[in-house]
Image 1 (cartoon, helix red, strand yellow):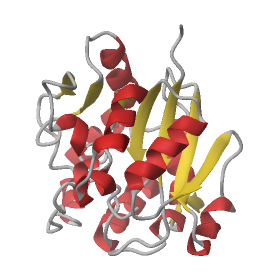
Image 2: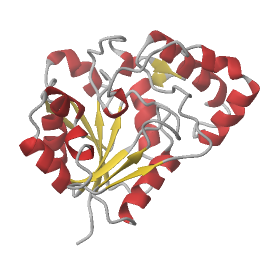
Image 3: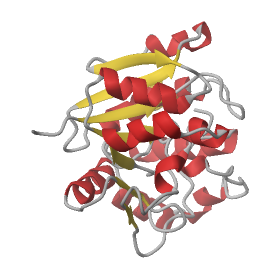
Length: 250
């Protein structure tokens, strides 16, 4: 049977450090819209679902939902439950998980993670957490069976909030693949958790989007080679524990 590969994008309005960030403008459109435009270009996806909390505080997200993106609303705090139920409603057999605070996600990189997952005897694959791809290209791919096991058995707060720790902490039970990249560009902080992060990402869009709306890793490398001072904008931001694989308050 052919897999049904579904991207589940988590988003919310009540970010701790930058509330409402998913609606902040990037080149004339909300941050979340720009992010979803990129996700739609990932090769191998069968559907895209946005998983947001049920509370009315999050209703503004519904107003900007692009055509073709499905919506699921669930628990705000139990993100594992929200993700599992969205994937179940989507009839997913394989889930790609990306958080909405990654508006510069590179479709090529995410597609490579999916391809590596399909070509390997694993149930979980991801971009490396500590080195390799820029922070903000983070992509996870896993089977629905692995997600169902986590949903049924995970008990700790961090496992329920961050969705996948129950899986990747047990590599003997859940064979995993971590895809690295050399040279190391992990010091590029391209996620949006703080005002400084948004300032950097906004400048990147202001420079690159008019030239090529589909800009990716190579365009970013050229930009930071000629204007390395851009990376100083958010260089002082400390990444919260587990935020690489969490909802990052998105």
